[in-house]
Length: 146
Length: 440
Image (cartoon, rainbow over all chains, first blue to last red; front, side, top):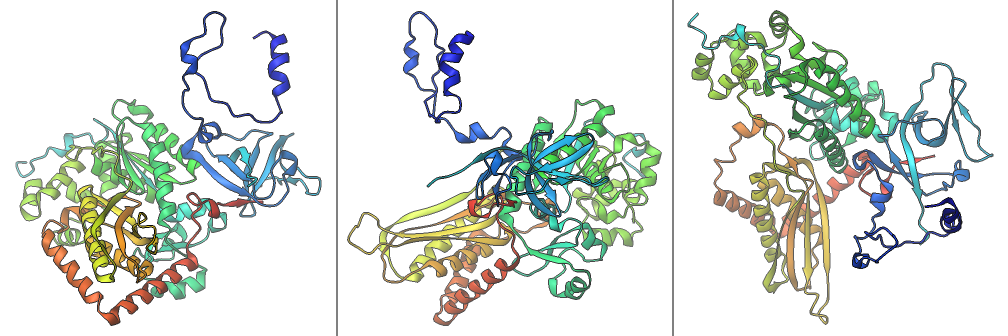
């Protein structure tokens, strides 16, 4: 797709309201439309969309508001993939003082920081020799309105 | 040398066809620790729900000398002294965690035999013998990271040896970092090692057999490995002869790739004629539980829970409607008809209401797992128990139970047990939306 088209069609849609559409089997190309365009491939599954590694994925309930800046609110459902290796910038579930906590993992100048996404909360800087136990990497969050 | 019919010294017990036995460490305790990090490093024991005996012990608890199957009241003093944390068993959680572990393990080999809730055999033939230890480490790391469960890996040429290698890895008799490959050891080293392991530690050698063996001065694994196997067959059984062969690297027990076992077994019927009294209903439930248990045993599985349901005829709009179901977790997974029927009847007493005409009832066995130890199935006398005999005895016990007085006792008994269970059972972290772990 040429960039001009991308800018015109795709880019404005990014960040807009989520629209669920059926998935079609056929690519859009010039020429005759295929009769298969009428054929719907199957319902979309949120599991498929949100979960890459079924056996290593756990759901965790967010408690409190330390991560509102990242769009994680009290009561949200976190999808946590334990098979992923955490890198700096990931939102992770970490074990801190024998409790599970959700924070952004920052590795900077040899320091490991658990960063809340809320100015009311303090950064947690790991001391020398203190080993961080990452429980899993948060891959998405879902929230129900009703 | 004619005394021995196996030329054991020539056999290299490492890997003609390497098999790995992957076993979860203190599985139930480990499951609990994944979701409750406070339990890490502390003495934790998981108790059976019905009789309060230890069914899993953390390393710390083992170190305190608490034995498997020890009843809680016996360790209560020790528990107070050392702050042992006692948990009721949460088979829903263990079942789900087991399914995850087994599913991931299945990606490490084209052939897998899930042997019990927390262990499985993997066929590693065709793998580079030099790399098996590293492969074992990869398995270990993967399971620990993906599911949070620590495992040990034993690798050898037969199932019996793989079990033993795993035992060595776990007890740190041999191997390194939880992985032991007998193929890395010379015949002399193996002999030395086996001479330090009690004969009772061998897979398939139960307490009775080991006592008898010790009486014959066969005290260590090495003693049994080098024993005259045909004499052993005469004195014991073909099973022990097979064990001796397996200890010498001759594979006698095939890897049994079970077909994917059923997840649940349902037996239910609509009644030709609607029933309303408890006795008729309980008879049907007992019958369904009985035939479900038969299917269960045919699959060589055990059930961790029983669901009982009853319903009136929904198409008779005018008559009063009632439908209820109840799930009762088994203290320990079982395939025992009597236990399953009893539990089903307990469940029925909890949900039964008089004054309704019931159209349908049923029993659903849930949380099916492969029956654990082969040892028990070999010597079990399920076969001896005639089916009809069994049904009759079950029916008898139900009839006894259905006497007016005993009915209330049974019902209140159930309630008390439930209350006790709830106290220290962990949440269903992975199977209930309302019980998910939380992160602050």
